[in-house]
Amino acid sequence: MNKFFLDLGVQPLANNFLKKYSANQPRYNLKLYFNTKSKMVSISKRIPSSVMFNSKYPYRSSMSSTMRTSFRQLSNEIKKKFNPKLLLEIGSNDGALLANFDKDRAIGVEPCKNLAKITKEKKYYTYDDYWNFKLSSKIKKKFKEVDLIYSANTLTHISNLKDVFKSINLILSEEGVLIIEDPSLFESIKNNAYDQFYNEHIYVFSAIALKNLLKKFNLEIFDVKNLPTHGGSLRYFIKKRSNKKYNVKLSVKKQIDKEIKKGLDKFKTYKDFATKSTKSKKLFLELLKKIIKDNKKIIGYGATAKAVTVLNYCNIDRELIKNFTDTTPEKINTFLPGKNIKILGYKKDILKKYDYAFLGAWNFKKEIFKKEKTYINNGGKFITHVPFPRIINK
Ligand code: JHZ
Image (tube, rainbow, N blue to C red; front, side):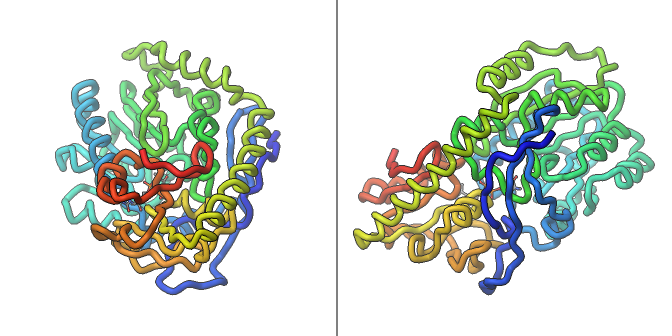
């Protein structure tokens, strides 16, 4: 049974960066639910993929050095441990991972045509289509089977998980490995990061819920790693149950035990999370209002999907946060979804004119603080809302 625990209000599409602000842009209710049987956490309103992931999708995974490094390290590990003859990436985005593989040994699936175009131009075989059984059958016809399937921050964006795993099963070789990584529910709850929930994140997985789900498809997790990326992610190594090449590692039990200890299998944990999120909203607004009352200026740093959730949930407008800055070409000179707040292109010293910078990309805090050393040394301050609203400068 699905039980409701948090209402994040009416939210625009998290990546609908418009060239001209429109008060009438589509908005949807964002409510969070916990399934007491499967232990899955999901949002209620499902927006068709074609509405969210189209030829104007602005998110580029290669925009940060943290992510490029993470993909490079994983690629080395994949080559060493699994040495795949053919790797398939579901949601290959602009090719941040593919770039580490030979062009004849890696193929991409990316429904956002603007992004697929980038890897196509680099001569990576790319299907600019949605991941589903029809596409998987098409790939099977051409390539027969794939011995490594990788997918980062994509499967949680697809409503029909049954179709997702059925399609994976169809082309994954008998001894093949599926690696997926997504924000960790454990870390989201721990950090009180309610902003990991937005219309693209239909699910936020726990190892408990994923294990339950995979069982239905005769798949199992044989290793799991905690990653610092995206505010705390989990990388799952998955195989067919019939595949005896890999033993199930202790890491899987450890992660599940940790999640049970945190109460991720209990509804009460989510009710508590909802109470904390409501309190966080109140404190964050108070903090911003006080800063503005003192005649100080705030800019948002990193126009993330997460920041869209925060601003729309907390009703923050440009009276509080004047502008945002972001390095992504597709986001520059557009308006933050749902808000009349303009996104300025990043340039060195842009922060100079502002007393505070709200860390929209709090998951890149380390990278950003390194980059903005001068601003901090000159008295500039950052604001964050995780795990609770406060001013930080280290
Ligand atoms: P970042 C997106 O979420 C959407 P977002 C998606 N649904 C998803 O699942 C995750 O990614 C994985 C900018 N930036 O990665 C670049 C700077 O301007 O936290 C990006 O716009 N300067 C697919 O949007 C944004 O911040 C910098 O120095 O929450 C980061 O977005 C750095 C480091 C980043 O994902």
